[in-house]
Image (cartoon, rainbow, N blue to C red):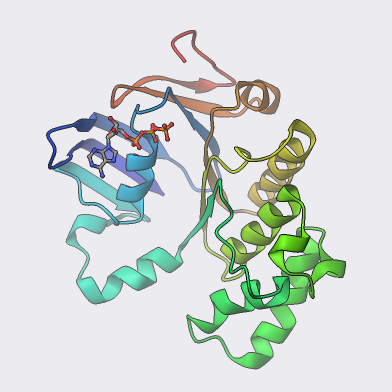
Length: 227
Ligand SMILES: Nc1ncnc2c1ncn2[C@@H]1O[C@H](COP(=O)(O)OP(=O)(O)OP(=O)(O)O)[C@@H](O)[C@H]1O
């Protein structure tokens, strides 16, 4: 489903963020990507979303070499990937319902579909009673649930989460992880970048460790001392 073939990324400043990454993530997997600050994790996500181009190497998503995609096909490719960030990135002046509905409107979903699916997503993330609330009226954990609902509302086969628990206390962080696990069990491939060692240890999933732009370990439940 996601394949990186000898991917290198050097920024125009001369900084080498990725130095020959080879990776294969299968459909339906749950994978953590860990590594110290500056090791290249966010760069990797940006390459998967085609916000950046690799300096060399190839990236395949669903067997498609995304480096060879025509420009007009990029929005469709991106719609196949839901994204969640540490800072939630919700529209502050729109309520919860509108935040989720917006993600559907921009891809042209009919009003009837939106009316059906927004409540389904709210139920999935346990926020059925918060549809009318503004993001500022919610806890951090609740805001992250809204951003998850928004990321998933168009049913993407892949979910990328960049530090999804970075702003949350341990209890809320754990709840979000359990939700990601549920979402994964429903068939979505989930890739999570995190610094949260405790969560990675408890979840016992595949852990890919990146250091200075290379994969230094890749094993189930595995945390190396290098991280
Ligand atoms: N736009 C940019 N221009 C130049 N260098 C960059 C740019 N973005 C990132 N870098 C550099 O590339 C390297 C990898 O950065 P990246 O953001 O991918 O790391 P990270 O593993 O996500 O770090 P963190 O855990 O702190 O978020 C770092 O040395 C960083 O300074």
